[in-house]
Length: 93
Length: 390
Image (cartoon, rainbow over all chains, first blue to last red; front, side, top):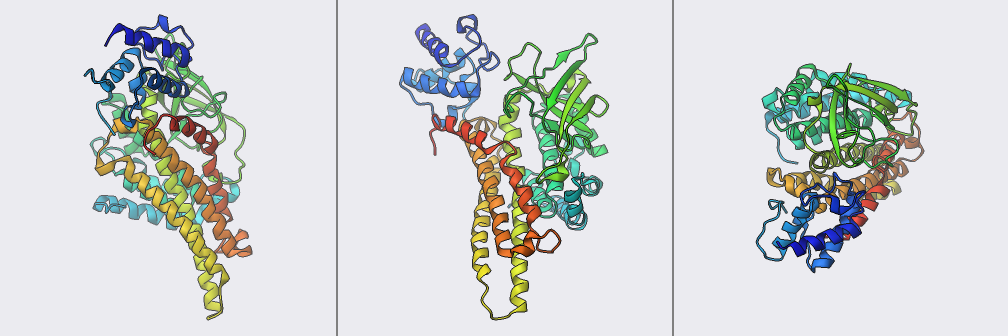
């Protein structure tokens, strides 16, 4: 996963995750929910990510764990883009 | 419902007998006096039913969710308050059993639940969070001696004054964000519950659910390691909606039965004469059938083919599914009761006849407010924007 993707993810997070802290102060692996992202904000985040990357997250990937860090989001996008980096969901649906 | 094995059927039979012989007899007095249904809960204790859901490896009954749900239904037909206390207790037991992850303290605790038939209440709502269980203000606060403490303003704690132990949501630490929560189990003697108001309500009067200020001190190992977000989505919310719905289905079923019994008695008194109310009862039956279908389908959907698919339970589609159960059941259960009242008429409106259904209607009306339906609709509205399957 390229650094560019993570940059875009961070800009989407800055605009939509409504974090009480600056996203640049968080590591790629920091838990975004523990950092203060609400469930409601996470839905807006998912919509914005679908828009930014021109993808659709299937229902099995619409779980908290897929969106709980920059790295987890990057893995999910890579999986949908066919880059082969598996997401953390372990299947489901 | 699936056919239970013998021990499961024995539990259902025992609980049904308690419902018929103990809970039913006391139900009107429990309702009138807004008192805890102590005789029915003691009888359930005596039957070992409070540890029915404790895994067999820890000494409990190891009953399936299907069996526990059936017990909630049977109790709901006779005394709503007894049934709701039983359901809530089982939700706490199942939640602990599903998320203790081998923790020795919690394994030992569930053994005690079995041996001593301990009753567990919960304090998951909090003044100042607007009814949002996924946020906490009170925090697990380290004390100098290594213990933890908290003080929580709980707007309702069902049977708080009658429970042995208390399961409470807290922020993980005093520095944690409101959504970074854990569950702590405190035992009697570790928590002090200061009543904040009375419990004089329209219905569900015997659950005795006033507000309390809870103050507790306890050991760090009494905090479940699993993040509450997981516990909530994989267990507490879907199990609550499933078991509550079985209670509500029980209430609605008895209201329907009373209306049918009333019509039969009328038909016997005047054989051959038309009974206009019979057509109305047919409408009530149609609504009851829909309610029963949704309640049993949701029970099936929780563990499809007996597979405990926790990843699926974490999806938004799953959140929507069990929210929809709660919305449907909480609308249709009082609908059935109100329909039954129209069939029976003034005889059902009176509180002192074999066909009284006022208590059923009042109890069932609580369903829309136990987690306000408008809050669930707001949550669903957001999830609908992103979820893919209908």
